[in-house]
Image (cartoon, rainbow, N blue to C red):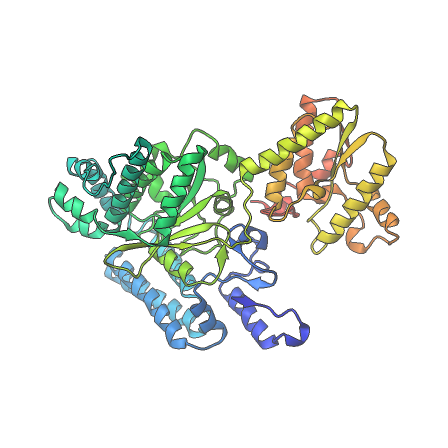
Length: 583
């Protein structure tokens, strides 16, 4: 993994310039493309990174080949693999000879241009070529017919008596005479899971076989499924089966045809108390399923009637959790990309879904290949289909980083309810409850100072007021929490009806805090107040809604009109975004 040296005398200006060029040329620099590239906070929903550590969406070998300017043969070989995928796509889709030759020449010119400097990632070149192909050809779903035909055949297979007989056959079911009914049910489910994974693994051979009898299907269902990921899945499902709670699996990048088998797998997982979030591609990416496929393919549309289709690409944490807590058990989102797994470019919705998931299962062999060859750790356990094995299906396990912390909705609600209970006890003693909303992360580089100002001023208020419980949100932060977690937790408390006074930070508060610290107000804090925080703006909206239900609650601070400069809070942090930035 790449890490920028901390000591000034160890920094290599040439290397840092090459790194900067790598990120900008690949359009992966957040500073240069803030509307396309995930913020560092959003990236940390998915990837666990240490301070100063740079994330790159490729294998370690590919990154080192580019940055160290070595192993160029490896890089060129991977470039050629991209061309070997794109060229036959064009020749198979475009029938008009002139248009086909024109496109091939145009794409080859772009391919040679982008590969000449040996700085572009193969996956980024692939995405650019696909984008040009779709734009020029004006075909949004190039392989739609092929995918639909595949889905049609699998749909017919699932409706056949041969399939029903094969999936329900007792062969291979190992039971002891004293096996309890619970264990019998588990073993039946695991046997069906193994058969469905095996059938999906052999799907290409299945589709080439005529007269799919029960015996032939049993053969295709008998491929051995093994690996640390398969063992982890079985162990996890056994645990979840016992706790009687809902858990979430993010199902990443299903493929045409096998997506219908995936749905059969998911139906079994639901019996274990699992809700599944299926992540598809935003736009065409070879045989991977896109949101358009789900909506327009008649065979998918019919099977996905039971699912909740989430089309928002920038969903809030509250809205996502509300959906997950509904009666639905299957959800479909798109990851916001048209390329291999790339957390730097995925949508806000995908990042939040990843963060809310208990486990992630990667169905795309291409994604699995890259993830398994990257030394980065992720915030969730990942189960990966291995591309390199042909005679059996291996599902690998990539454990989450040991320091990655997950606060589930239940965890956050429990913390909120504990605080609510404490506030109720304080109110019974006749005390007044005051909630203090202040700038925390809205001024770049001032996070620690913001916390210091907040602590100093709240302590001042506590000394000044008698029998007033003043809530300083910063005092309830726990390692691993981000602003999404905090906002969700605090909204539960804020809507409890227990707050008597909701005070929003004013510039006078900030001046007083610096006075108490014996310091002058620095330029970056002059004129600032709660209206400069999108988090506080969100809280002011909540405060106004709460006041309608509880008119006795008092709101102190800047007028509402001043808050209108802000509209929404960011992903993983409370940062400023003007109305003009929001499409």
